[in-house]
Length: 152
Image (cartoon, rainbow, N blue to C red; front, side, top):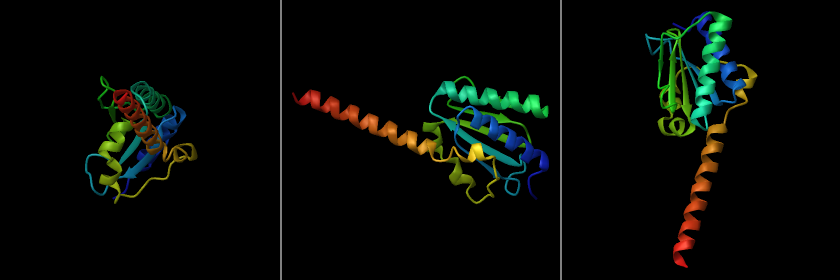
């Protein structure tokens, strides 16, 4: 079994909405062969809670306006570290970069076929890791400054 045309339509609209709000590492998987509950997952991330919320809001608004789709469930909104939008046919995961790196959902679904996404969405690949490297470098620099301060 493969994802339906409706699922692909929803995934592509959600991916474009996420890209328009500068999401990182947008990727989608056809999980219809391994899960009975949905056809596809869309994963996206952002460097801060405010941007996670902005991406989620844009995806929800775009799917409703363009395709008449409303999520049956929305979880994780309060913390905005990992928000899940369940549209039955697809599930959209928008994660804070730290959660994205920690949970690495791509590893779970790597055996599932990747869904072709719009060019804007594909152009976001690698951004989460770039951000994580910058954050690690900043933390290391801070630790070195603190150590230097103690030595004096």
